[in-house]
Each structure stands twice: as structure tokens, then as C-alpha cells.
Image 1 (cartoon, rainbow, N blue to C red):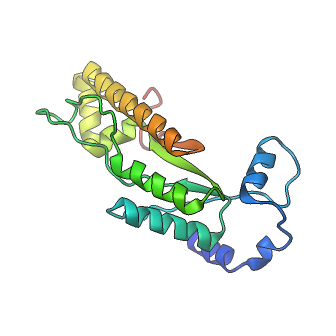
Image 2: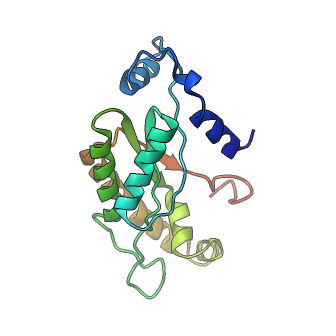
Length: 191
């Protein structure tokens, strides 16, 4: 079954919810400690690619309502800020690297009204470096100046840790660290 077919089938399947007696949070809490649940908790997500925190929050909440997810996994489509140096890797620590995402998380939290947990998405630092430049530029820097790459990755990591702390203060229940590029087709095993 393709993803689109699954989404349509899930949205159109009220039988899936028949007999559900727990709240979303109860279901997740019980599943996390291996207790019986009325049905398996589930979630899935989508990149909407919207430009404002308000649009992002609205679409995320609508997706949650339409597909009756138990956990709201929030995508992060706002880019990491580019450095002001001469090169892409001349980066400084950023205290709030994703202010638009933090605003979206606040709106999502408020829109959920405590009904469900929400988790934030963080992209691994290598992936962020590729988005700031390109796959080719990251590999070139690794070959020519590996310490400069390590420094850039460390700055990205430390800035994202600050974002994680902000997201926790807003109410994020957890984080999904996306490591989609950690495979043999994308990277060498050592990387």
C-alpha cells in the first residue's frame, strides 16, 4: 500500500476508533510502560513546507484532527540560519535558531489544549550542513579541512540543543532526530 492510500484509508476508517475508551495521552502513557491499551497508539507526519508559523501550526493541527493521530509529530520546515561569514561553514552559535518553529510549537500546544502530546523534529547536524551548502560542499570540506567541518557541525549541534531546550519549555514531550542521510547511499560508514 502506498503512503497516500494508507492516509486516505486511515482518515476514512471510523471503525478504527470504535471501542476506543482511552484518551490519546492515556493510550500513549500506558503503551510506553507496556500496559494494556484499547488500541495501538499511532502517528505519522508530512512536510507541509509552509512559510509562516501560523500556517504551519494550522495545517499540523488540521492533519492531527483529520487523521486522529495520538501523538502530534511536528515537522520543522524552517531553515537553520546561514552564517554571516565568507563561507557557509563560518557559523556562530545561535541561541534561538528557529524562532518561527518555536512560535508554531506554541500555537500547536495551545491548539491541542492538552489533548495530545506533541514532539519536535530535529535534523542531524550533517543534514543541516548539507542544507546550508550542498552534499558536494560538505564532502569537499571534509576532504580539505575536516576540522572546519567538525567545528561547523559542533556549532550547529550546540545551537540545536538550545532549540531543544526552548521547545521543552514550550511543552514538547519529546524529539525525533531525523537521520535520513545515515545510509550507505548517502554517506560513508565512518561519517
